[in-house]
Image 1: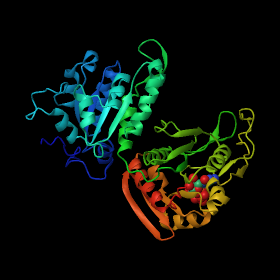
Image 2: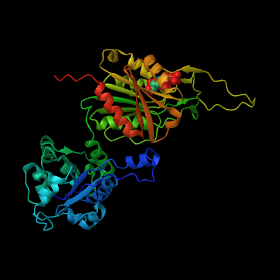
Image 3: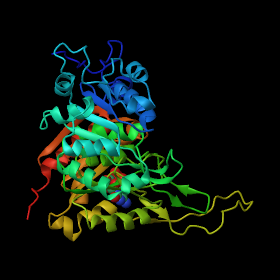
Image 4: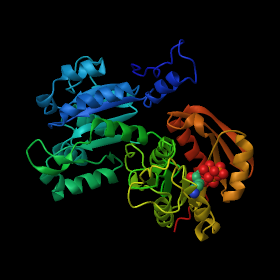
Length: 435
Ligand code: CTP
């Protein structure tokens, strides 16, 4: 059998291991070593499948495209061959296969079959085990326990909501396939509603998530992220350099690990990770209120936010003007509530129902400060990092401090570190009691 796998994008000899360039290359190779069969069925969303193919290849996957006859009405195999770098299969009678069994050969080589777009007609075929052309034949012939099937539906909104389609997708999931969501908005037919195929980068993110381990299935995770902004007057305020990237990476990693995730975010300009609920806040008081509320339902609280310790005692209603005296205005401050300490010392945490993780952004003596902070906040796990070195960066290095001691997570992308931290949290959670 041919081996289509290629090693992931190698970090070249001229790139220093652990350097920002090396970490960037690794971050761009989330699907390295994965061989994906990308199946296209008939639908206008086939034009997006070209971009999807490119995106999967960019993430380091090798991609074998298989198209139905209907898909070839919308986009040519030539385009997909150019983008995937390998000949496209469109027929079960493809004579290029020595044994003339493309459905067997191609399905056994795959780490996953991704059908995108997946038409209403195609899902109906999958359900009934109809196998009258190569792609449906492959889906039926794949070793079901080893080669997962993911589908990205794409259809008109009436077709999407039709009881037959609802029934079919529900049954497809019950049969073990993963049905990715659909987008909502303008449709090629001129109507507006649900049923558009997800965007290529959304499908890519979902596929990357699919391959991650799932230690947090059934858990609810709350993450606080970013800076807070404490208003001085309607146009000025006090904030800090936190970008929110570490918190958002943890939210994404927790979601990938199977959790239901909410991120309470201070003012940051970051896209919300797929499948994560987001509550936007500005001040520490707003963040405190939102976190206290959300923590009532959470199993895990990860406090990454750089919350302002102080806020102006009173924000001026109007812009503070110079009064000509040359004297700066007299500002007075009051202390903000400590969100992490309040939640960590609340009844649910004390009862062991809520596992709290704190962060410590320090400038020096990381271990000593992290140990002291862990004790002061009353959290089982505290993650230390050097704040000025990480604010706004895409990489970081962490020091995990718990009652057993400390352990370093060496420099890596924030997403890679977030995944390691999530795995550590998963190991520390009490086993879920299943009724
Ligand atoms: N934290 C919080 N609410 C605050 C202050 C901090 O939830 N008002 C959380 C942070 O999200 C972080 C941890 O507490 O998880 C430690 O934050 P940090 O700013 O490093 O510590 P401080 O308590 O502010 O201590 P110090 O400024 O003295 O280092």
